[in-house]
Length: 108
Image (cartoon, rainbow, N blue to C red):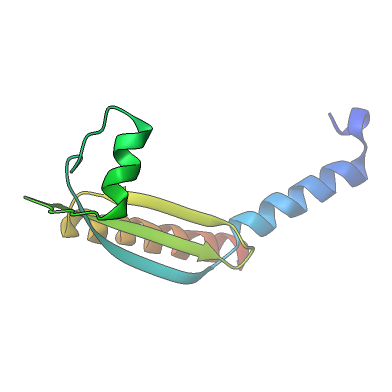
């Protein structure tokens, strides 16, 4: 393949992949979410518009979940929704192991 695209192009691609894989988490965010089934149903845009003039949202039996977000040093972002705190902890453990592994690979 190098003979087709050239050595410089191949090296440039390898450098970009290496940089992406070695990017470290710059910011990690945990977001607690409360969701519910749809609170109001409307059969027309006009009905929804009327409701929004004086809305009355009452959430019953909210479902709790978490959103895990990471911004990496190269500007890329990762986001995943998990159902519970245990899932949040497991995902964070996976991200921590991946970060440690990539650090060892990239830094010898």
